[in-house]
Length: 411
Image 1 (cartoon, one colour):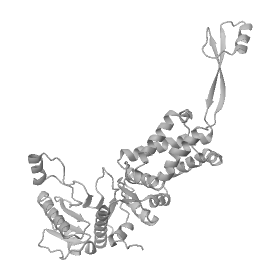
Image 2 (image 1 turned 90 degrees about the horizontal axis):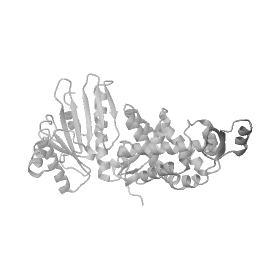
Image 3 (image 1 turned 135 degrees about the vertical axis):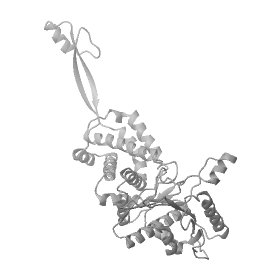
Image 4 (image 1 turned 45 degrees about the vertical axis):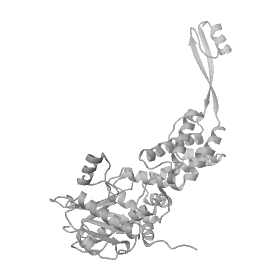
């Protein structure tokens, strides 16, 4: 018997948030949804590259493990080499293996101080092997980018990514792979890999082409790649937080485009460990609305200052959402959002108290209405009142028109 998913889960599935933190799992999305997201993130090419890379490896982690731990080691043991003999002429002495016949010929011709040696060299420059080495190097480089950006870890969808990176690096540095020269790969090398017998060459070719898709400028290829390997958080409360954030962005954009058509532009970012804002709405006159997710976007207040002084605590408070509103020629203001995936009264009460704590901590920034909002997945009995600086809203009613009016006051 299939259990029906919560409404917010259904909403999130149709609105990809660009989640790239390790504690996530693969959940494919519709290619059209992927294309819409990619339209909003094209101004950040480095994030776009990481996003597509993560999607590629998330969708094909089994193929990566097979290549790194099974096919490639087996293929290395059977790599074909061509042996070439190189002659070298010396004067007055020599090093290496003497070619007696050639040396004697020089001596008989009146050159008694001239010697000839011959050395055998193995060459691993078959076209399919050139492709193999290029693919391994590219895989190592791209996996390193994800690791250095904090996208991969020893858990979640990427738990084997770093091990595969290490294995590939080991094989490239310590086996005959290092003797294969580097060469620009073209259709000739790809065709040779197709015709080669070992399955490792076929997999190397596939990985080469998949990595090419990451750098493609074809929007359909990029959208298909993202759709196949889209990631969502493992924890339901994190998914709910993103659903609340995405719906807030959707509501803000819809209202602004309706009331001020053609003036606002939305730019999205990926949810990375070292990210900036989640999204920015910008108007041509410089007005700007930024949404931060699970970040310390505001200056410290009395709570953090006291915690440092009395308790030696150096951590920062991180509201689930922080909305920064920049009016041209005016001081920026903010609104903080506390999110609770719960219908438990005690949990919601604690969340409401946290929202009030944020009001105290960030009072200098919270100059509009509302100052703080609690959003819950469970039902909230009351409705927002203008006289309350902190209000509570449930998912069913998120985002109320009254709250949206307050957020956009002055725009």
